[in-house]
Image: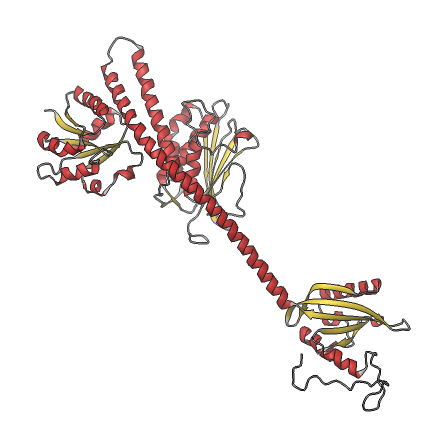
Length: 430
Length: 124
């Protein structure tokens, strides 16, 4: 908008008799009247008009319209939208124009985006059909206000709002984690205290059994059996306590760069006896040149042994028990959240990961139990076979490694356990 | 000649059974000290070949007793085997414990076979 102190100069205003001060008669309401033309030309909003009877060629194109479109009046007048804008934009304008004519009344387009030589511009446009009295000429008159800044500000506000709610959600999640961590910490302290108190009497019992064991020579033939049972019971109680402490303690991991395959081989050796006894066929497949991971070897071995033992137990009544172990690398597409899935917050889309799959063809997990399998002391195994701590400890260790564990039934029977671990040094450095 | 084992542990029932087991074969001669405050005096008097030491005890803990023994000119160098009901071995490694060169940590409950093997190994 011109802002000189002299103001905008337009041809003289007609007097009451319809004559200008120069004496020439002027008609203030004809669009080509010089005075009105001057006013329109200098309005702070873009004004244009197209002649619908003449292929919608532009007949009015004011200064603000020049500014917005960066196209001079001389180049615009007499041309159609198709000669000025992209086909896509022109199609859109034509559609609105036709609609204005069809309806015979004003159309308000609160927001439209127009591509100009200077870039994209957001406009609020009102289009009005104007007919001459004879009815043989129809003009589409448009008024556009440049609302680009407003739209951009609103978009930014929306973006900030979205960020804010996301931060809020993160905050809530962190708070939940903190509560959980605090809870776990007190359980951990409790468990460690109980463990110490229980292990002392266990130690005494074991010494008693040792003494009796060495004293048996003849006499009651059941004595030896009884002592074996007692010794096993002491071991079992000890294991339960150890598991509980493992589950609840928040010990730091001793992370080292290592690859999964050697660790898997070692763990398979540890359960070799069980595998042979149950006639389990083992099928191992590793992708070549797997990236190294940051792993606490001892802890992760615990994970593997637990998973293998679970698989073996699940395949007890199966004709051809088969344990499959697969390791391959991948790029994470989406981080899933589902029943039977433990998701740590460390994995993000785009992360390079190594995936370990342990599959069996055993009895599977009843659907109703899927949501409970990670709960401490949840077990379907007979007393003495399982403590119900295996998977709780497994998921805890995987979580401590910043990974996820996903356990689901396979379509053709059996269970598939999938552990996803991030390859260190990909994407962000946390 | 039997090797001398000093057991310092406040669990009287446990130490009694431990002594019975260790002395049975005649390989070891055992002295029990259930009061950790008297551990040093007992050690000076008994002159053990190895000390079997509990960690969590009222009065002085295992780390303190180990440090006392190592600091005593007549006892310094006596091998020490720690026996603990603590679940995480990390909890055992207090500074005092870390100073002892010949330290082995065994978890409770421990079976006799492993314990005697460890004692033999510590004595050398």
